[in-house]
Amino acid sequence: MDAKTRLTSGQVSFQLVPRINAAGRIGSGGLALRLLRQKDFSSALPLAQQLDGLNTERKNAESEIHNEARIQALDMLSREPLASLVLYGQDWHPGIVGIVASRIVEEFYRPTIILCHDQGSLKGSGRSVREFDLHAGLNQTAEALLGFGGHRLAAGVRLLPENLGRFRNAFEAVVAQNLGTSPLSPSLTLECQLDFAQASDQMFLKELEMLQPFGPGNAEPVFASPPLLVKDRSPLGRSGEHVRLRLQDEHSGLILTAKAWRMGQALPPGIAGKRIRVAYTPRLDTYNGITSVDVGIKDWQPVAD
Image (cartoon, rainbow, N blue to C red):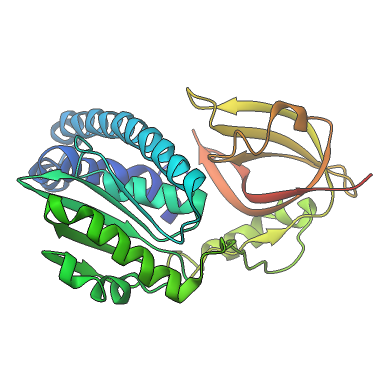
């Protein structure tokens, strides 16, 4: 397989899988099955286009639900300290609440349950932080639920509407007992410091690719950068929630383009011209047969002048 057709696990995870999953989330899973069973391009293309349209619809709904859930979370946390978040929207889509739960945990770093109305009861998806076993926690709130299932980091629940307050209080008590009410801070495991000369070595990056697929139990390596100069900053996405930076390694002088997903507010326009260090993952990215180094920013901190 040549560079034009070779797929990485990242492309599968972030480009193909969301489109295949969109069928089951907001349409019919049978559409994805029909696509995967096609034997030629001309038959597969219209089905792929339908899936792409569903994925766009899914992203729009996800953005709307996330904005509403985020406002609800901020309001709840402004009134009292909470170790957990149980958020509810009557019209939120049951196929999307799990994605939104992941994004809320990413921002607020608390075990989170997102609920919506579904066939006369409340249905929800939960996501957790690594310090809290979500399935074990839900087991301690089972009397308030019609049912639940899942594992340590993700779960689904169903409950009666009149039990929402009871479940929210019970879940908060269990999480607070385990984690306390003081906010936790997420942490990153960094492999070592990696300058841009090393990060641009294609042989090294191909060796990193051999560690794929990445996921729970096999985390993608994250490295610490030396001091970098932000040459310029530009927004990514329609809402500007993502950011593209051109970063110069002060030691080697090499400049690489980096992307920071959902860090538009954390990396404001004034960051241009500043010196920073980043926690990042370098990858090979091939587009139209041209291979370049893609830098994915996980976190950053300023460098004192």
